[in-house]
Length: 229
Image (tube, rainbow, N blue to C red):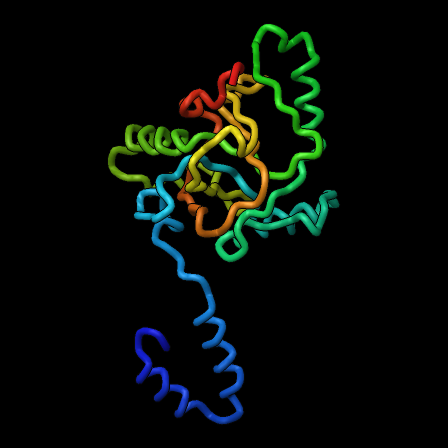
C-alpha cells in the first residue's frame, strides 16, 4: 500500500487513533519488508521467473501433525514443518526416516527384489525430501480430463491425495545429479522417485491442486534415474 498508494497510506495513518498507531506501523513495516510472491508459486501453469515445475512431493499439513501427536506418534518436533508454512519458510530439509532407511536396506538385500535391478540409494545421514517427476502431475491432469470430461468438481470426493492431512507441492528447479539421488523405479514397482537434499526456498515452490498419486508418470529427464547414472 505504501509503495503503490503513498497518499492513501498517509491519510490512513493520520486517521488511525494514537493508541493503535504503533501496532499499525509495525504491520505496515512487516508488509513492506515481506518478499514479493509470484503467480507461479500458486499454480504450475502460471508464469514464473524460475522456470517450469520439475518435481513434486507429498507433505503433511498442520492437521496431520496434530493428529499424529494425539495418537502418540513419535517425530522430532524441531524438524516438523507443516505444508502451510512453506509459503513463507520454504521447505526445510528433514532427516531420512527410519522406515525409509529400513525399506532401502530391505530392497537392497532381500532376494524378493534381486531381479528388479533397482538403482540403490545411500540415504544414511541425508537431509532433504522425497520427490517424483513433474510429469506425474501433468499425466494425472490428462487422466482426470478423460475420467471427468464435464469438469473436475468431483475430484475432492474421489481423490484424497490433497486431503486435509496431506498436500502436494512442486518445485521449480533445474534438476541435476548433484542435487541428490534419482531413480526411475522403486523396489515395490513404485514409479520414478528421488531424494533431493537440502532446503528449498519458498520462491521455488508451487502449491498444487488436488492429485490422486505421485507414483506414476515418466522417468526422470536426461537419464537422471538410470542405474548407470
